[in-house]
Amino acid sequence: MGYIHKTFGKSPKEIASMKPKQAANFLLDIVTALDSQKRSGNYISNCVKPVKSWLEFNGAPVQQRIKIPRDNDLVKVADERPPTPEELRTILNMADFRARVACSLIAFSGFRLEVLGDYLGDDGLEIRDLPEMNVKDGLVTFKKTPTMIVVRKNLSKTGNQFFTLLCEEGCEYVKEYLEWRLRRGEKLTANSPLITPDKLHLAGQHIRTINIGDLIRKPIRAAGFDWRPYVLRRYFDTRMMMAESDGLIIRDFRSFWMGHKGDIEHTYTVNKRLSEDAIEKMRCSYAKASAKYLETAGRKESVTKEDMVSEFNKQFLRLSGYKDEEIAKLGDLSQMSSEQLQDMIRKKSMEALGLNGNHQKIVPLLELRDYILGGWEYVRELPNNEAVIRLPNSN
Image (cartoon, rainbow, N blue to C red; front, side, top):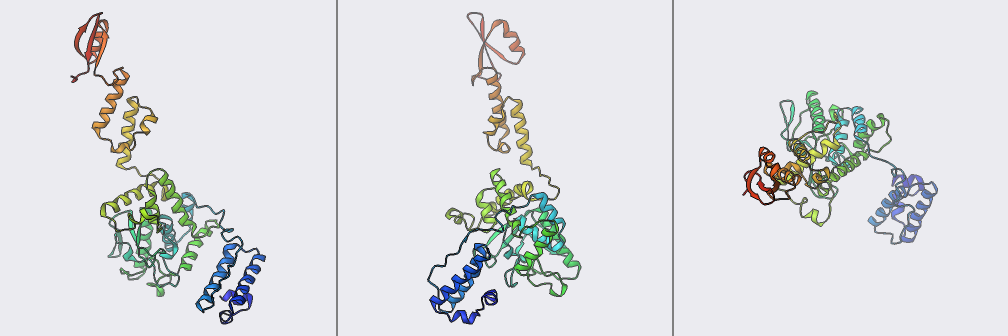
């Protein structure tokens, strides 16, 4: 409204006293003037909306439809791409303790900037919102990693409380920052903001959304990039989308962690209170996805017990004669029991010997000795100088 007053010479009081037709014409004048300046449709819309809202608040709503050119044209960010893990690593290296935490929380947990600090700086993420983190005797520890971050409903854009997760790399940044605050004499309680103003006399206060944006923008510019702070949320979204294509997570998990409402099925599953085993399943899926697609420290892919079992089973199947195409159709090899593996190897061996599922075989008498030495058992002799043999332990 201040911009409208300065640019078009109309004070809020003058606008509120306008008649409907006069107000509609004034809005059209705003659109025409800004369009002639080659402003984007989104920019024009952001100027028109508060004026319409002010008129409605003062009992003079504009019923006439105000058409805004290029309303959905995101000119400035249309070609903006999310960073790669290597580029994110560069940004984190250019950040201080505080900015590194802000960057990693958005990039690794996927929530909006407003979660860290609201518009007025009255609320934001607090230490109590990380229930698996302990702050005691000057040290910060985590009971579990990836650790849970609870986004209270008053911080959620959709009005629903949800939780997301923070990978081990992000936990390290939080630990460094909070321990630095403890060393400089700040007293941390459950209600202390996770990110607070840098000046000690302002410690314990929440930080505003606009300051969070400035905090993140500084290392992005220092790293040589012209991206907006919100690009780090797109990093989370696109990297988790890649993890989804690999089968590491499901789409509902990604939507839930980002605070989206989702469809009706989403509402009756992850938007309700989750059981402990469901939470641990989400944690396990996030851990695999973040290790492969989110984390930047060292860029080393973690090798789990399941990965090792899967690789061993794959090698055994290859040695038994299975092709990669056949192995790919078997699904998750880490869940295959030793009995199932032995049965599949035995089946492939029988196929190679021409048994096609039968345990017995007819061979010439002249080759009988070689088969017996090879472990086969003699059953009986047939006419035409042939004999029946069988595999051991077969009836």
